[in-house]
Image (cartoon, rainbow, N blue to C red; front, side, top):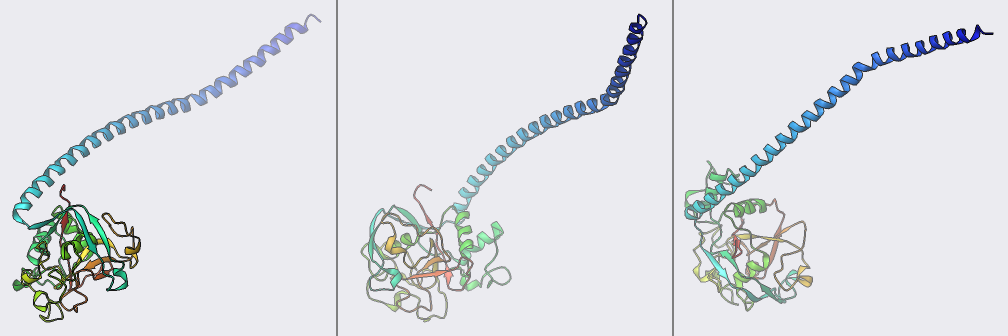
Length: 309
């Protein structure tokens, strides 16, 4: 039996050699794959590093461009104030009477409202003023303008066929905003709740209404219609966009302090009546509404501003 031990050793050695040979063969096959994966990993790490460096550079560039844009906007606004000066009237903080218990249902209840101080344009925005915005900002023209401009005799007429978003864009361009419905009404009627800007009795010579003039008129044609604050052309001539969404029952739940309208809706508030409205339409408390996209020849706007803006 002594011969079995060497035989077993030889067999075991052969078996181990076979295993080693298989391992070497498999290792030789796997080695390129391992090297490829390592190279791929290194490439991905390098790409990540390059991307992070590029992102940092882009962020620095974006920040620099933002600063440059802010500087350019400041310069533009400073020049624009000189070129497109617009007189504004300051309306002091305090209470006023809003609504009308003898008017339409959506004007009820009449109530006392408290507003912070604000500024409002003395006149509606005119065709001449709006054309500067169109020419400089590249904004779309009102559809009734021909050959790129308004009729020459209507430079001082209020601009019309302006959608809500058109009016907002102009306000943004001049660094202002649309008035809230409450701000508009206080500017028009003062603090004691009078029916018209000039008082409680309708006077046709103070307002462009009832289609007496067949369309819009210059913004300064009716000085007798000035509000107690000296704001001009608030009632009649054209209706004016306000910032608020319209809701017919809003007054019933509206806050007393600085109401800004409901959070959403289908229509925006327009105020002031227009050239074909009757004496009820051009009351300071009368509420009107229109979809944001509405563009008609009796709707214009004026801007407002907070004192700190």
